Length: 388
Image 1: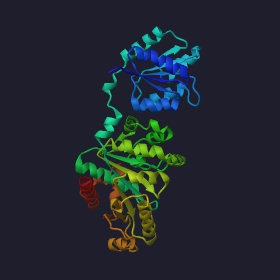
Image 2: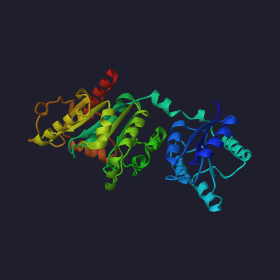
Image 3: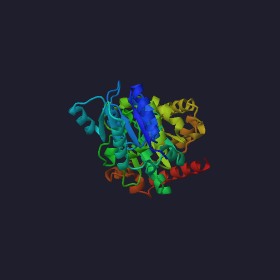
Image 4: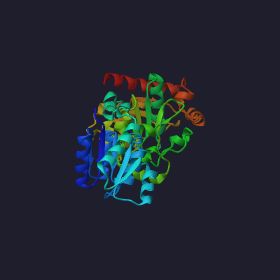
C-alpha cells in the first residue's frame, strides 16, 4: 500500500502543486487547509508523514506540532516543516517543538522528495500501529455511571469499590474514572500523585481525544483497576463545560476495558446529561432521609427525561451512619417509587481501615459484610451485562 502523506497548508496552490507532484511518484495524499483540520485528519487517518506549513492563521505550525507530539497517536509521526521562514531562530523553534526536518520555500521537487524519502525510511510503518476505528469496533465496554442527587453520599467511595468488585469477580479489564475536575479525592485517598490527565483531555480539542491519549492518561493501581483521576484544584471545575470532549472521552474509555465505572458526582450538570445516555446502566445513591429521597426522585425523573430507560436506573441505599432517623429499605423504596438494587449497611470503621491502607474495601476487607455487599452489586451488574 502506498505511504500516505498529509499536507497541511493554508496556501491552496501549495496544496495542489505539491500534492500532485507527490501523487505522481506514488504517494497517497491527504490535504488540510488549516491547523485544526490538519489535527483532525492526522488523528483520524494516521498518515505516514506530515508536511506542515508554519505560517497559518488561527493555529500556526508550531502549535500544531506541539499538539501532535503530545498525543500518543501521532507522537512519532514524522513531521517535515515546509515554510517561507528562513531565519535560523525559526528553524530552531521548529525542532524544539518536535519537527523532524525543515525545508524553506521555494524548494526543488527533488530536494523535497529526498527529505521525504529519508524521513519515511526511518519511521515505523503505519501497519505496526493498530487503527483506531478497528480498535473501537473490537471492544465496547459496559459503562456504569454512578451519581447522587446531592453531595456527601459517598459516590466516589461506592463507585471505586464497585469497580474493584467487578475486577475481583471477572479478572478482566476495569477502568474507574472520576469525571468532575476540581473535586477529585481518590488520588489522595489511594496515595496516587496528583494527576493532570483528565484536565489535559478536557483542555485540548475534541479531535485530540484519541484512544491512545486516553489510554496514556490512565494510572495503574495496586487493586488492579486502571484509574482516570480528577484534579483536586477547585477552579478546574470550570472544565465540566467541555461537553463534546466528555462524550469523546467516554467513547474512548469504553474501547479500553470490559467495564468502565464513571464517578459523575452530584446533581445533573450538562456533561452528565450528555454522558448518562451513553451508560449501559446508571446507579444512583440515596440515603434514608426524607429530603434526600425527594431530591433523588426528581433526579430519576430528570434522567428518564433524557430518553433513558428507567429499567437501566438502579438505586443503592447507602446509609453511612447508624441513626434511628434513617428510614428502612422498604420505606425508602415506597417513598421513592423506584426499586432498590441493593443497600450498604453503615460500616465507618471498615471504610476508615481501607482509607488508611490507601485501597478499596474489596481489597482490604473482602470477606466483611460490606465487602460482600459490593460483590453482590457487582454480580447483579454482571447478570445485566450478560443479558444485554
